Length: 125
Image (tube, rainbow, N blue to C red; front, side):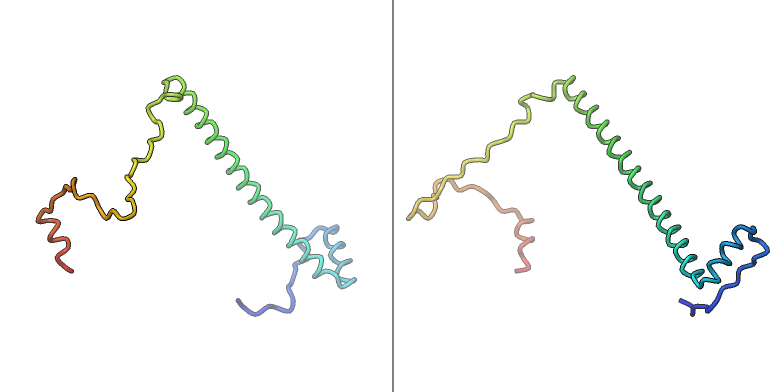
């Protein structure tokens, strides 16, 4: 950032008499800098408030769109009979036999095979 200047120049020939008199009043009371600073801060706040309002409006519009899409999907599901159908019941987890104390393994039902691809996969050990 560049070094701050000690003073700014305002071309008063481009100001209306009303604006010039107001600035002169603040300048004589040595409050012109504070006054200008407060105006700029107010402008910056209004800019950020306006941006925030636009973002909130966009968010609200997106929410409304999603809500409308959801209600359309619900209506479609009801007309097609998808809602309430038993096709998508939660599956029960398969029952895994619990090993009892003292039983290492049941060797009666062993199945499986090894392919050459399986052997190559583990050949780097």
